[in-house]
Amino acid sequence: MQYFFDLIRHVFPTIEVDRSQIVYRYSGIRPLPHHDETAPGFVSRDYRIERRKDAGLPAVFSLVGGKWTTFRALGETLADQVLAELGRQRLVSTVGVRIGGGNAYPRTARRRIEWLRENVGDTQRGRVLFTRYGTRAADVAAFLAEADDAAVVGDALSTRELLWMVENEFVRHVSDVVFRRTDLAFTGDADAAAITAIAEALAPVLGWNAERISAEIDGALTVLAEAHGVDSDESKSHAAG
Image (cartoon, rainbow, N blue to C red; front, top):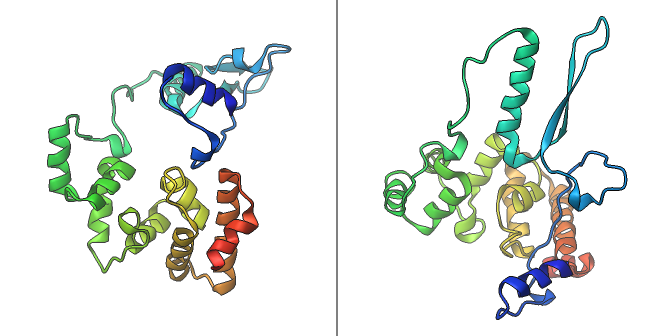
């Protein structure tokens, strides 16, 4: 972690930062190909595709490396090699094709405001949905408007949006919402009260009883405490209070 503090001081020498300002921390895992004694920092983060063909058996392509930010290029490269193996040619390319919330995404600040007004409303809640879902926010907003919707965590989350997440985003736990479907933990807004409110709002949707609600709250608070670097029992005591 000291590496990041040193880097900040190097790039922004007049800005003072310390550990007390850390809101959330996490680490990702990236499998790297074996490189004998090469230091991990010098191992390429790029991907490669290895082909193996044993006598009498079909060819096997193995993906080595790769990362989320290059998944489309990786997929197309792999598809090209498989097509070549089958003696087929590519008919369609995904280069330049926008998908998900990036489809028809407004490119200018003015067009962004127009899009908000036309689809979700130029409000704090509308901006939260747009930031979270991109242009898919229009579908989410339409879903929210179909029935009564109540705030769960201020403008950041509502009961109908939680229902949307359960039905469309595979949410099954409080931790799914806090750490993987929203930026609540990352922005420091995932406190004990927010986690409790989310658990209680999810309960009727997922059929949780009181014991399951308590377990979900404890589980999310434990992960949050680890991310904050504090004692999990202390975090849970705040929830009980």
